[in-house]
Image (cartoon, rainbow, N blue to C red; front, side):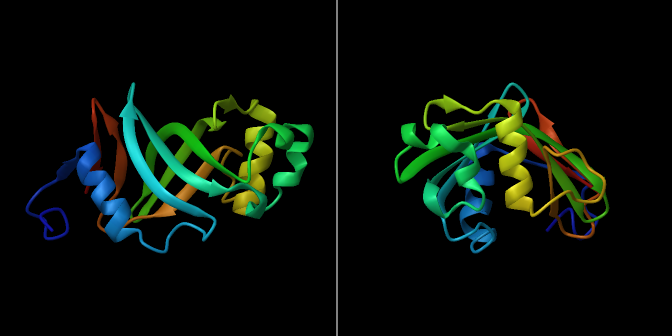
Length: 151
């Protein structure tokens, strides 16, 4: 509220606060096949972890033989960088994806992200996942152990 009303130029969210926002504020944001999303901050990267019904992920069959090592549901972990794209827009640059304990090679990560995003978006790199923010937020990122939002 302080940021939106102009009382503050920047706010920070701890992992607990971010998890509260994910649970309450982003309800319905993730597809039905993703549940239990939680966040953490590691080495100034945002980590998102969720339970995924693997067979329902669009394009998952393109992972081919890798699917034999993955169950029907799996813990999926994404690790990446946050940045602002201007007022009301942010981007999550996904550096790494793990399905269970299996790290995906960059090519498989990019193919999976392209399927989930249904193609390239706004001329951004393949590993970039844009998202909407309140219009008064011009920048977002990770600093130390917190996520910051800036006017």
